Image (cartoon, rainbow, N blue to C red; front, side):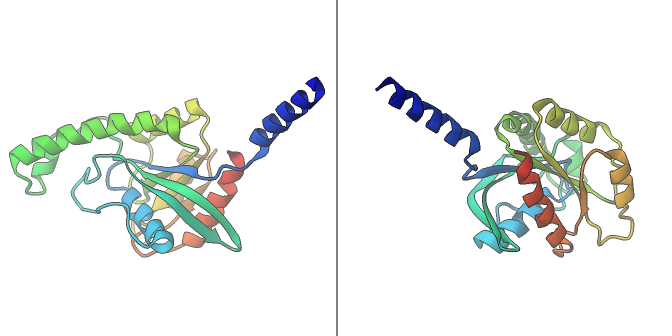
Length: 213
C-alpha cells in the first residue's frame, strides 16, 4: 500500500515537471507608440480572427492591460496556444501636456495622463504573471534610454525569457544594428507590424523562445 502511494506521488510530481504549458502567457512590453498593439493585433487577427485593441498616433492609446485567451499560433507544422497580453506603454514620466499636442482637450488630457500612469504600474505588476515577453521597440528611435533599461532590468530580475522586436523597419530611419548593439545578450528580430514584414522570423523566434520556459 505504502509503495503504491509513493509510486503515485512520484508519478504526479514528474508529470507536473515535464508537462508542457497549455496556455503560454505572452506579454508585449515597450515604450509608447513602439507598435505593441499593432503587432498583437496582427497576430490575433491572423490566428483568432479579431484584434486585441485600438491603435492611434496619440501616445498611450492603450492605458489598460488587455488580453486575448487561447490564440493558437501555427508555424511550420508546429502549434502552440498563447494568452496574448498587450500592455500600456512604459514611460518614466507622463504629462497631460503631451496629449494637448494632438488636439486633445485639457480635461480629457488630464484624464488620459492619469489613466496612462496607472497603466504603467499595472504593466509592471503583470510581469509576475508572464511566461515570456516580447519587447517592442521603434527601430527609428535611440534604444539607449531609461525606459528600455527599466523594462529589461525588471525582466532580468524575474528571469523571464525575452525576445526583442525592432519594429517599423519599413521606415528609412530604421536601424536594427543600434538595437542589437544596445542589447547584445538578446535575440533581435526586425519587423514591420504595420505591413506584416518579416513575421516568419518573428514566429520562428517565438517558438524557439518557448523552449526556455
